[in-house]
Amino acid sequence: MYGAFVPLVGAVLTVMSLLNSRLSAAAGSVAGIIVIHAVGLVAAAVVLAIAREPRRPGRLPLYAYLGGVLGVGTVFATVYSFNELGASLAVALALLGQTVCSIVIDATGFLGRPVYPLSARRLPGILLAAAGIAIMAGGWRANVPALLAGLVAGIIPGITFTLNSELGRKKGVFHSVIANYVTGLGTILVIAVFVRPPIAASARAVLDAGPILALGGGLLGVGMVSSMNVIFPRVPAFSATLLLFGGQALSGVLVDWVASGSFDARKLVGTIVVLAGLALNTVLSPRAARRTTS
Image (cartoon, rainbow, N blue to C red; front, side, top):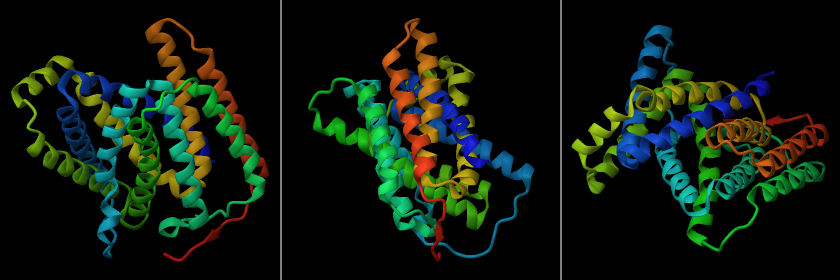
């Protein structure tokens, strides 16, 4: 049941990424990320005040609060890989990174998640998904730093979702969202101290961008992080990754079609093949999972 909502989260993620990229293009990457995190923090605080979610007792290790820090790295890696490789290959590499990360998380029971051992029964679905990635990627060029950045842009979200969902399970969903935005905002502010973006020009650019670009990414981010905090602990990481990708890819094809007026059949075919791999993996995978101790 929870898995049915993951593609919707993926579609929201596509729209959020579109808004964030346009804001960053207008105001600069550092200024854009600061605005996104500041808006998200305020929105999460308002939701927490309305929901009055109790904070659960107990102390957690510091690494449990690193989801927001890693999220900042995701944004920079995504921007670099998109600029250097183009959208199709960047998305394909990110999916490959997410897939590898999710398989490791499932097989090891990272942070106390249920263990879904990797078995030969899962290989046909994984290989079919890989074929879909290859179809989407098309040609590529040997830019090793950008290729690595594309993989990192997929690996980091898998770890981030796990950290945030575990924090949400132990401290409360919206307390986890608050922690995500506090640590993310703190990280980008530290980076800003060293980068020193033009504050006045960036502020004018944010105002000129309008409320949809300035507020949309942060508000959608709160909904996405909150939703994944609830869903991710209840769905195998590999299945969650491919379902999320399905929502991202299908909505991305639609957005590109509307924006450019041209239809990219290769992206759609690649997406369908990946989703076929997901369906095959779901049919062939063992249903039982073992919960590790946390």
